[in-house]
Length: 62
Image (cartoon, rainbow, N blue to C red; front, side):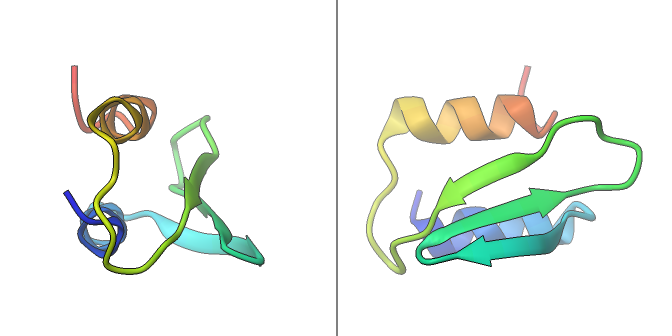
Protein backbone atom coordinates (compact mmCIF):
# COMPACT_ATOMS: atom_id res chain seq x y z
CA UNK A 1 0.00 0.00 0.00
CA UNK A 2 1.22 3.50 -0.75
CA UNK A 3 1.29 6.25 1.86
CA UNK A 4 -1.23 8.29 -0.12
CA UNK A 5 -3.61 5.29 -0.20
CA UNK A 6 -3.28 4.81 3.56
CA UNK A 7 -4.05 8.47 4.23
CA UNK A 8 -7.07 8.25 1.92
CA UNK A 9 -8.28 5.16 3.81
CA UNK A 10 -7.93 6.95 7.16
CA UNK A 11 -9.85 9.98 5.88
CA UNK A 12 -12.64 7.78 4.48
CA UNK A 13 -13.04 6.18 7.92
CA UNK A 14 -13.57 9.46 9.75
CA UNK A 15 -10.03 10.36 10.79
CA UNK A 16 -8.98 13.99 10.51
CA UNK A 17 -5.54 15.55 10.28
CA UNK A 18 -4.89 17.34 13.55
CA UNK A 19 -1.19 18.12 13.37
CA UNK A 20 1.59 18.11 10.80
CA UNK A 21 5.27 18.61 11.55
CA UNK A 22 7.57 18.10 8.58
CA UNK A 23 6.71 14.77 6.97
CA UNK A 24 4.96 13.43 10.09
CA UNK A 25 1.18 13.68 10.19
CA UNK A 26 -1.08 12.92 13.14
CA UNK A 27 -4.67 11.79 12.64
CA UNK A 28 -7.47 11.49 15.17
CA UNK A 29 -11.04 10.22 15.06
CA UNK A 30 -13.68 11.27 17.56
CA UNK A 31 -14.38 8.30 19.80
CA UNK A 32 -10.98 6.71 19.15
CA UNK A 33 -8.47 6.98 21.97
CA UNK A 34 -5.42 6.50 19.74
CA UNK A 35 -3.54 9.22 17.92
CA UNK A 36 -2.41 7.79 14.58
CA UNK A 37 1.05 8.84 13.43
CA UNK A 38 1.93 8.53 9.74
CA UNK A 39 5.40 9.37 8.42
CA UNK A 40 4.21 10.64 5.06
CA UNK A 41 6.37 10.06 1.99
CA UNK A 42 3.98 10.67 -0.91
CA UNK A 43 3.61 7.83 -3.38
CA UNK A 44 6.23 5.48 -1.91
CA UNK A 45 5.26 2.02 -0.69
CA UNK A 46 4.71 1.54 3.04
CA UNK A 47 6.50 -1.46 4.60
CA UNK A 48 3.97 -4.22 5.32
CA UNK A 49 4.61 -4.34 9.06
CA UNK A 50 4.29 -0.57 9.41
CA UNK A 51 1.07 -0.54 7.41
CA UNK A 52 -0.43 -3.33 9.52
CA UNK A 53 0.55 -1.57 12.76
CA UNK A 54 -1.06 1.70 11.63
CA UNK A 55 -4.26 -0.05 10.53
CA UNK A 56 -4.43 -2.00 13.79
CA UNK A 57 -3.92 1.16 15.89
CA UNK A 58 -6.67 2.86 13.88
CA UNK A 59 -9.02 -0.06 14.52
CA UNK A 60 -9.29 -0.90 10.83
CA UNK A 61 -7.67 -4.32 11.10
CA UNK A 62 -7.87 -7.10 13.71
